[in-house]
Image (tube, rainbow over all chains, first blue to last red; front, side, top):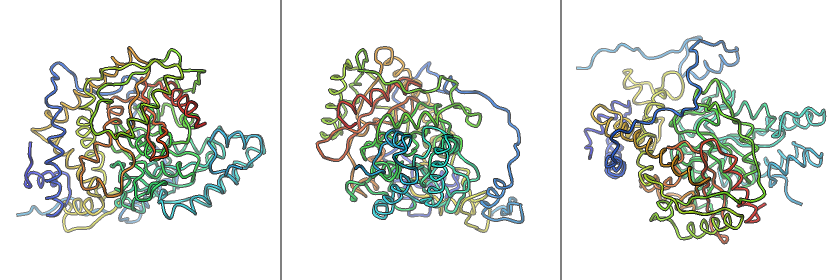
Length: 100
Length: 478
């Protein structure tokens, strides 16, 4: 499998990475050696083999519930916001005008 | 008189307990060593000098009051920059997290603190633990203590150098495909990757969640056992921690009755440096002299493990690193639209290797390709695990070299990603199978260090470390 620059550009869009022309070309070239290497797994007969899921000795499920934190922890979390409006996280608008 | 910072953890424990030394003197000796060497080596991204000395004083007070917190009380340790420590900066070696402050303690850091350990600082690493040389840190490379033109290995290169250069008595690293063992081999220290599920990953910045594991980097196998004993255990905050018997070290008189397998696929592989082959074969002979029986074994799919790893790991990377989008924390590069803000923040904050792996994972998970890449890799993972299950029916341990080469020069492999990936050829299958493995330093006639990798069955760290200790004794390292 060989990917061309347009296909890599599409992946970059899916991954939300503004690569720029130079890095796009470099990554496309890197894929030329990496993909043939990893594709050797496709030659292995895996008929009747289940994909590996989880180690059997894992703990399993836990309850999903909100937890209280102390004021210090809370302030540390808030202080990591890139932009703050009081105790709220400020973010750019989610609903955008569709591009033409 | 030996310098205090050159002590092993076990030696320091004895001297602290007998009152011959104080935690303050021990900590000060490490801080002095960091001050004299770290300008050249860059093992640390931050040193907590004042905090460390205060903690050392508290430890001394506890000891005098007869209220020791645990075996690591007063022992100065270093932590890789991807484990959270509340109120301290944590960047995972990335620009996207510059200035990020940990909101809570990772389980391992909480356990070390509770055990009274003195945390000296956070160590350099390849960005988000992606790399085998520590050249991929956004904050500049770490250099090899024996030759500053060479790399220390990676991604836990800062922790490996901190231990090798006696800047601390021990350190924590994380290992997704060899990131504890390969830098340990390059720098001549002991590095243990525990069984997946032995140590909680809560508060470890995730690279590939199904493969990541935290472990100790130390001067001896005994020291590694002391740290593992403290950091191990089930954790309600990490559902993948195993419901198994706790690790307790068990040191035997000899290796009589221990069968050690040499996989012919690994030992017959091309591209292994002669010095590495000679030093590790010599180490195998030493294990034989200690009573072990050495047998050749067949380990199918060993060759394919690296390819499996370079599909599974990037897939998990692409998912895990999607959280770095410039919204809730980390760098935000404001742009006209939301999409452009995401894309610009990520491209500005993430390095080339990280972006390469995100793209590779995005490809392997994308519609039309997921079955041929991701699902197929998960099936081969099942076959790899079965291969080890079979092997461990006839042998107790498996040994290979840790890495195919000794420490290489800075810049030698940065432009050839595949050559860098091949550094992990002997280590990745252990993560793919979830097994425990240690790298123990071998004698290389004064040349650059070489590591022997000793692999054990799931949750059998005690046999792995016991064999490592026997080799240390045979090689008269301790």
